[in-house]
Length: 264
Image 1 (cartoon, helix red, strand yellow):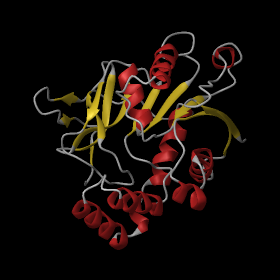
Image 2 (tube, helix red, strand yellow):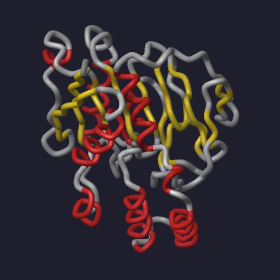
Image 3 (spheres, one colour):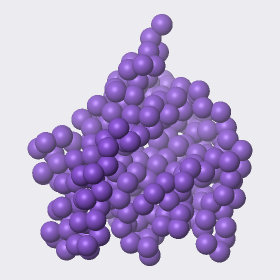
Image 4 (cartoon, helix red, strand yellow):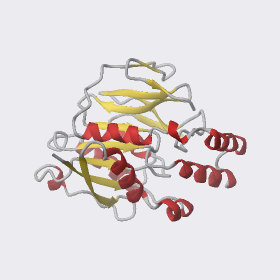
């Protein structure tokens, strides 16, 4: 029997024109990768998309609680900084705070990608800031990060010492997040690195080094479909609650049975 999931995508940005022309917008990218990840799970996924930046539109609260229209709310990445107090960002943080309360908490799961990862952490009491260690690239191009683990959350991944907190899951199994971009094809990271290098945003030596890695690493090493498959399992309630990790208050390093070590 096919299981059906209906998801809400909170769209927090529009990709650069060079990415948009070749790979489409965030709705297209998320639809593609979730479809790939659910193909062998006998799951059918449908979406509704909400522009939270320009239109500041959100799923109707009755659809989240009373009607149970949505199984999960997915928050995309953005070039914006999650720690800023721009009106649309503050509204998004307040919306996530509300979804962390009942009756929504028991009815809809939250998935955060990059900026969405940071927004959920901020809404739940964590601290986000620009990373003093600079830019990072693992199917991602980010310089902000979650510095402090929110209360009631576990760490799932780290690229310490660069970015100690790379993925989160809440103790109540409502939220799961990742700093990277599983919806990005490898070439998207390549395009963004070149654009930011040429604009002087990312240091030239760093960008060239990462571009060389992209050209020489096997694409079979990419975990995008595997990771999104875990998100689908999470939304379906198939992932068990992990045991607690510890975060060093001095270094931010995360230790525990759930932590996966990556390479930056």
